[in-house]
Image 1: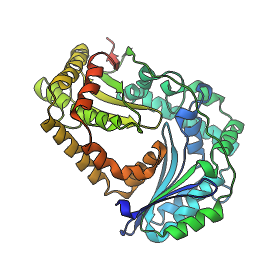
Image 2 (image 1 turned 120 degrees about the horizontal axis):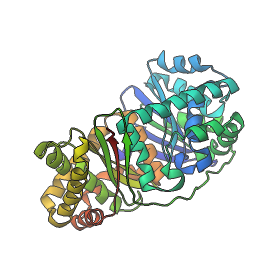
Image 3 (image 1 turned 90 degrees about the vertical axis):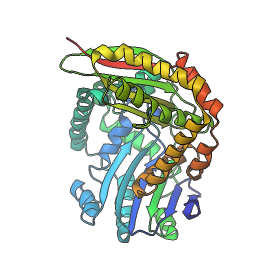
Length: 403
C-alpha cells in the first residue's frame, strides 16, 4: 500500500498523512506530537485532561452537537492520549469526510474549557484513576512504568489525585495554546478521500502560529517490587525489560523476542507456564516501541503461591532462548509478526493509529518497511537481547493477595 501513501509537510509545519483506499469509509485523526512524556511530574495527566476537555464543547458546538454530527451520520468518535501523542479521531462514511474534518478541526481549534465543565470532568478522571486502580491487571500494567523509569515516565498517564487537583482552567488553556499549534499537528486520513481537498482544508483552516513541546528528562531503571492487597484472589504479575528505541534496527529483533516469548498460544511462555505447568490462565506479551521510550512486558495471572516460580521460569526461558534459539523457530516468529501486520492493515482505523505512531517515531513512510525490517532480523541479535534479560536486566512487579 506504500504506493497509495502520501506525506506532506506544509510551510507552517503541519503534517498531512494520507493513505488512499477505495472502500466508502474514511478514518480521520487530528493529533499533536505531545503526551505524558512531555509533562512535568507536577502537571502529570494534563495532556489526558485536555483530551477530555476538547470533547466538552467548542465555540461552535456543544457536547451533544459534537457527538451527533459524527454519530448521526453513521460514524464513530473517540480520542486517546499516549506517552508521545494525543489524538482525536472519527471513522465515518467517506461521503461525510467534510463533516469529519469540520468537527475534529473544531475540537482542536476552538475548545471552550468552560470552568464548570473543567470541574465536572476532573471528577470523571478521578473515577477513571480509581477504575484502573481497582482493576488488578490494569493496576499492575499502570504501576509497572515506575519499575522501568524515573520521573514523569514512572507516573500514571492519567496523573494522580494531587496533580489532577492542581490543574485549573488557566493551566489547561496555557498548555493547550503552547502545544496545539500547526507545527506540532498531524492530520492522518486513511480511506476514500481526495488529497487536494484535504490539503486545501488545512491551508484554509490553520494559520502559522508556532509552539514548542517541552522535553522532560527521565532515566531508565530496573526494579523488582511487590504490593499486597486485600480482597483479591489472584496474583497479578508483570515481567518487563527495556528494548531499543524505534529508530534502532535492533527494535525489530526485540519485537521478535517478545513475540517468541509471549505472542499467543504458541509462544514459549504460554506453552511452558500455562499448558505444561497450569500455573496461569493469562499469559500475554506486549511491546511499546517509541521515539523516546521502548519496553516489552509480559503479564501473568496466577495463584500467589506461584509468583516466585513463574519469575524463575521466565528468566530460565530467556536463558534457553539466548543459547538454543534456531533459525527455524525465528523464521516462524517472523512469519507470525508479518501475518499479524497484514491482518491489521484491513482496518482503516488501526492503520491510521499505526501511521500516527510511525510518524511520531520519525517518519510515517517507514511503516511500510515493516516486513522488510522483520525479515532482516538476525538470530544473533535476538539471542543477545535474550541473554541481557536472562543476566538480570529486567523489572518485575507483583500485586499479591493479602490474607
